[in-house]
Image (cartoon, rainbow, N blue to C red):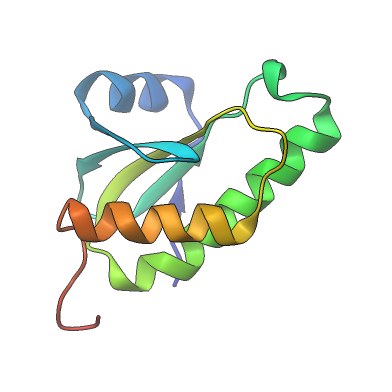
Length: 110
């Protein structure tokens, strides 16, 4: 499934202020209702050098992409929690849990 990317700092800040935060073991999921599915990932310098930060972003984007065919349209911001190691399976598991817990899953496709 394709989704829009949120790139502007103003849009990310707006989502942080108006969105609902949901906490999981590996990440913080901030979302707000929207007409289309849009996503942003925020990984700051405290997560390591650029190579590590980019790897975390790739894992989060792929985990989100694999789970979003189940979801309904929303603007989403993904904020990983600091950890020793990061894994695709853990991110995917937590995103699926959050989608189900917050009833963002479209039951017709699940």
